[in-house]
Image (cartoon, rainbow, N blue to C red; front, top):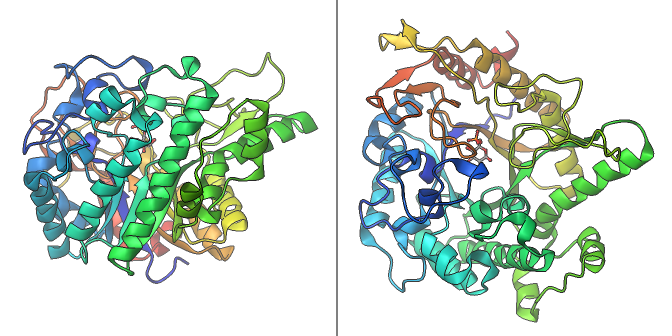
Length: 468
Ligand code: BG6
């Protein structure tokens, strides 16, 4: 049984839905120069073939979209506030009123429908000027700019937003320094010193805004957000087991710092071995002591670890990749499907941190076929998505029975949106189909898929319908 006040909902990010990339005084963000996602280098400026620039036009269609989420009975909607809408370059003294007013309207609309917002402050959308003129998060000055941005939105939306997340998938910076840290240097060319100094700045910024959030409103609940990717040894060879443990320790170090307020032993040794000498001031140490109220995470796949160089071939998966698990099947994009991994992640995290947990992303990216039928004249019979989500939610229910406090579940991309890794529209996660194709064609009409009613029923029965 799910807890009585379980927060059912869905999750999105500004750069994947809003579009209107240069309207309302918005500045450019790093996403506006990443037309094809993670595997190709950024362009100089925005290019026509970048679907992010138009998104799914949530900027203009938010009332219709929020009404659809409300029809499903959602209790919470996770969005992000585009930093470059509020501070177009990121380093201004004064915010852009038009940008602030846009989110006033969005929050009013949610309130009208009884949906509570959960807001990510930084979802892979650092203002481009901060990346190109300041070197991204390698530069300590970004801490102050981020604090100003955060204080501005905490004060403006006080009483309207209770759940805040600081950095989306904060451990992703290890794998994608440009997307997660605004650092325009390929990962292979970046020294460990530079990378970890940038990470340190993000961690200090995260703790600093957690403090500000609590000062502005003691009701504010602030969470960190990490990628959950349980690491399994590929074989029972103790060397594989130790490798899986070590990789897990590195992944979870980011949660450790947010929860315990200090660097874990694992990173101390890693820094010694890799000649990393962080610039950590006494003031930084004090700031890091501002720990989070809860831990949130995305979960798409698990991965295996091996010490056998012949088998150490990375497969696909959310950001980190990893050696494929021979016992699991994969999605059309090669992301392995592992519902049990979600229960494992919930148990690992609660054993370690003893904090309430929030699953803020999970879902299946799949090719959908629009066919005749349904209340809108066209629909998608997405039984595969229903099966995926049912299996994952049943794993969550087991974790709840394991006595783990799970605050809620926001599926990823309840309305089709632009993929982060590939910038495709054809990688769809939604309960709501959006008529837009990879080449940018389509009239943006919205259609309820079969999963729309299925999720509505799950929410209405507080999960009881899952095992019927
Ligand atoms: C997470 C991100 O990494 O995975 C989302 O927080 C992203 O922004 C999601 O969309 C799914 O990844 P993709 O590449 O399928 O869009």
